[in-house]
Image (cartoon, rainbow, N blue to C red; front, side, top):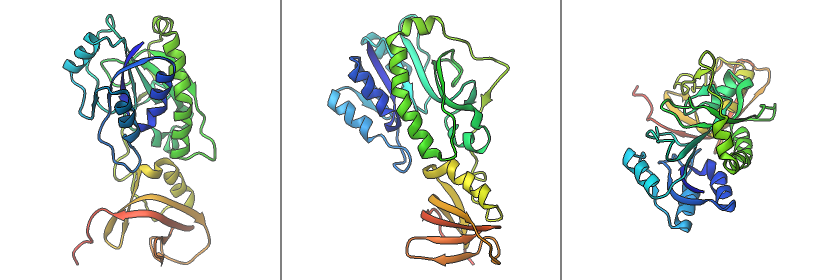
Length: 282
């Protein structure tokens, strides 16, 4: 099958599996990444190896039409943040992979909310692309229960490991999956907004349990911290419970690479962090 692909390095395994299964990749669309949590270098390398068109700009209706005219039989998206223009499903299939059990968790950044609020909806859904984001009929689903050992990186890896087989199975029998797809219930689920800056900011007047949940939820997506009038982006940290008499928010220890800060019932160590704005003027 001739395929146009939308994704980034998180979904590179899907792309490689489709190639291994004999599908022909016509072109690849990705997007500018932060190179902290999300990357696109491997996707770009694959495009170069295949010698196919590669774009970081949002796909246009004209490019969709050109892809269909050029022979694309199926559009496959996995982790693509832009709205893909409408695709005439009488001329080509169009499917998307989403990292929750739809209809729960629509949106472009749902995984932190799985840890913060909705662990029961952790999973993978393959659905038809539709006019509305993540609203298309469901072709296949798999639950990926969150374990006590999971954080955002581990859960993302587990999803990335399972996704190629799921996509491969759907593509191998796409006509049947398409014909038997189930509409998403209109009275269930909904859109999960991306976490706000406030929700991503470490509150020193929190318990270690609350802070640990935040660390699991955001990881290298990044949290925010206010220290001595300066705002920091925090990408790696760990909290533990320990009795102390320090006011919450006190910087207890400044090491060469780490800071230790008091919480209500313990401490947090910031292992990887960087300033994102200058200190406030005194």
